[in-house]
Amino acid sequence: MGRLDKIRQEAQANPANLRFADLRKLCEPYFGTPCQFGSHLVFKTRTPGDPRVNIQDRGGQAKAYQVKQVLAAIDRLENG
Image (cartoon, rainbow, N blue to C red; front, side, top):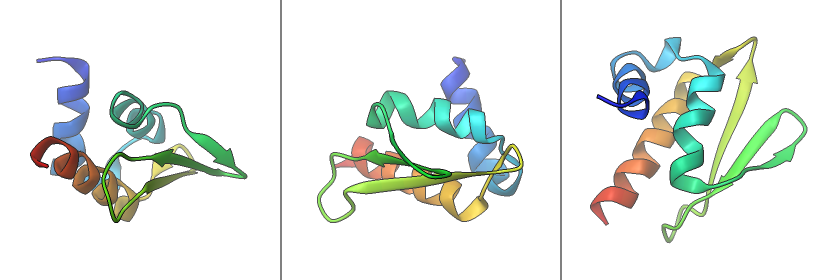
């Protein structure tokens, strides 16, 4: 199992306890380099209707609702 697969499984199992750095590592291969707006990193997706994924560092942890949004965006990319 690769590192990204492990991060993705951790995110699915417990979105409230994922490190921000791991969420960023998960996003970059799927969405590319983010734009930074203050404390927010914004990734452009290739899916119609939801053109952006926004993540934010909260004391080294990712916000649970943003983890869920990232997972949903990855699923949309993989499943069309």
